[in-house]
Each structure stands twice: as structure tokens, then as C-alpha cells.
Length: 116
Image (cartoon, rainbow, N blue to C red; front, top):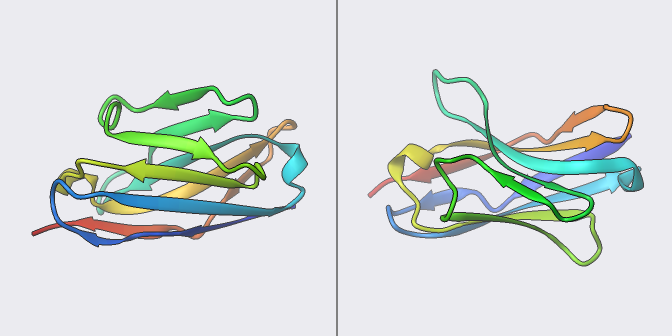
């Protein structure tokens, strides 16, 4: 079992920055990759960024160059540094973990609101 807890969301003005954190506990050695997804009201959940256990990253075109995903030294925390935020980045951001056997775990989500 893997338990994921997100933190760091909040209200920020356009052009501002936020850093989200996702702390994993439980069988973290089984995690193959972790990622951030987001869901805006009335829209489907979409990929934001992912990072594998080997450090390979992948970004949605809409955030490439503005957001950076990284892992902490202890490998049980994943961060999403979000810069140059836009109103269209407003959404609930979810952390996702996938094990080597294909099991999927989600966090409870953290709200990010970009507004003046």
C-alpha cells in the first residue's frame, strides 16, 4: 500500500509561483513513477508532469518551461515548482503514484487558484 499526501496549494496572483509537495508513505520502494495531474471544474483530469524512479521527466505542453517536477533526496517526496502561473492553471492538483506492478495510487488533491 502507498499513501500520498499533497500540500502547498493556495491562492496566487497571475505571474506568481507556488511549490506543491507530495509525500509518499508505505511501500514507497514499489513506486515506479510519480506524477502530478490536475482537474479544473467541468473538465477531465489531465497530466501535468511525471517523473520516473530513474529521474526521467515528462511535461504537458501547456506547462513545459514553467513547471518543474523533482524528487527529494529521500525519494519519498515529489515536488512541483510552478512559475509564471496563469488563471488557466487553476485546478485541483493531484499526486499519482504507480508501482512496478501497475497499481495506481492517488492523493486527496490540493487546490491551486490563480487570480488577481
